[in-house]
Length: 561
Image 1 (cartoon, one colour):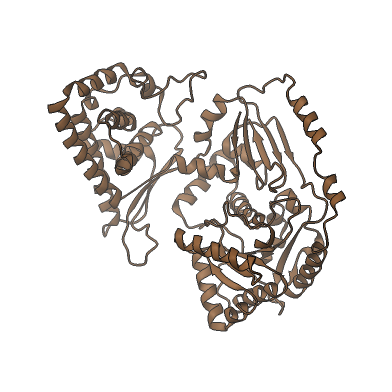
Image 2 (spheres, one colour):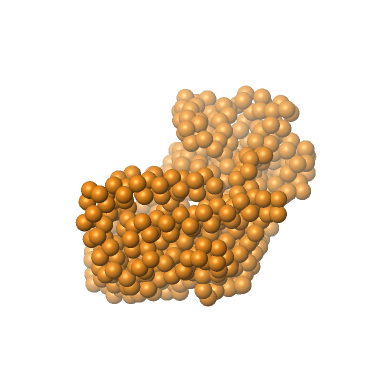
């Protein structure tokens, strides 16, 4: 049995695992690494030539015989999702068996990639997109290399680093990326294009900086998961935000045996989700591109945060759709005097892209909550704080989600993936974008509830959340508390509902009611006895999906395959 926890982003993780980015800095580092390898090979030749001769003989016998790769058997290990069968079973091609020949081979690849980057960044360059087959064709024509040895580049580099007994592999990471790029490119060049080559003249977020990049982007997340499903009889994928749950079998290409979504087991309405669509002046609030610069929207968002912080005790966490939007809002709020009003009730802390600064801000935020001063933490969806940081108890009495956290839809890599999903899996572009944005929003607001006795407000501050196509994609454990009375609220109405909720939650806990939703020792022992009885495995390819709350004391969404 294999368990993937917090797996709401499992498709994105699979995509990233098989994607490679190549830029100028990486290629320069790869060139230096090849120089170091060349010097080391020369040194070994004079001092211990037998080591290189032994490696050569092992490469003749093949990678599996050498021990670089396990045999692709269910009894031994996973089959490789990167290497094709001829790489696993055949001998390494003769033209890259000798270390010096392989180093020369890799130098030609690096030089060709440098040439392509210069062309992209040049006056006649621009954003270009190619299939792996087209890119491979230009590579082999430009370097006079054969395509087959490219499939062995990654494993051959691994063999060489092992033979030379390299201890600090981080120094060779850029060279490893180039070898990985070559292996993936050659392996998946034929058939349906499950990868895309995106070349951009400037991938830097710094204005004026030039940073051309070649991206080998995986478009099919099922490639990375296929060996796992094939090898193991039971794979559990669990998270509180696997919603809509029926989209994951399409993305990962498996058939579920059982699909189930469960409500939160609770003894009181411990969360109060609300959708605020209008400010106190009845002006609609939204982070849509055409509205986000509207001073009325900016003012209403600021006034909303100030009024909520004036009635909510202890800690409040606010999430924004991006760093740039958060920075622009905070700048406007400062000019309007809204930040000054905010600091009368709570201290203000802001997440930055710097890990050390954010860690320090989080530590001081908790101190402010502990001493009773109260604090508000301004953060970003898809940022460091939205994943894995818990705001339990008084550290998070409310989470405010400003806007719908869509991905950057002008990204060329995202456009390529959306086109692939539409063509091959019939997943519409808007359906996937809504699904991805709502799981991120759910992940953000879920930070506030971490146990049976915890409670908090979940505030969705955007008029688009009141639409059924958005709201219906929220997890069931949130929707069970999101009644019609809490939709399409103005700021004033939300403040009144917040007061009522906090007054109710501030009452002493009914211990008898709490015990009614917890298992007794006898019930746990009975479950243990039941689980000890012989069961029949689903076997290879079987699948089950379930979904429950994100609370720490309950199992969340799960996919068992």
